[in-house]
Image (cartoon, rainbow, N blue to C red; front, side):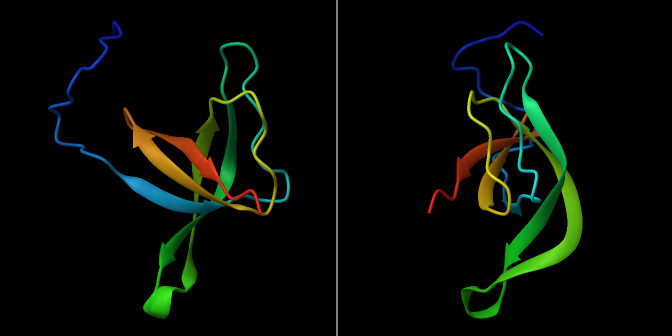
Length: 92
């Protein structure tokens, strides 16, 4: 597929996001043009009174950035072309 800047997706996927929690090993940084990834990111949802609840399901997240994502931190992920990508990391 050829990259088309400012291309509007019309496949009905829309914007989708998730809260994840990384395992102790985190997510490696990108190496050259290869994104780092982890297959053991825990999927969290916001429950009653704003508590974060682990729903007991792991998913794969790719890291296109030149810096690794730390272990045992919450991250925000967005789905791009069907693939989960790191969007933000809790840096506290």
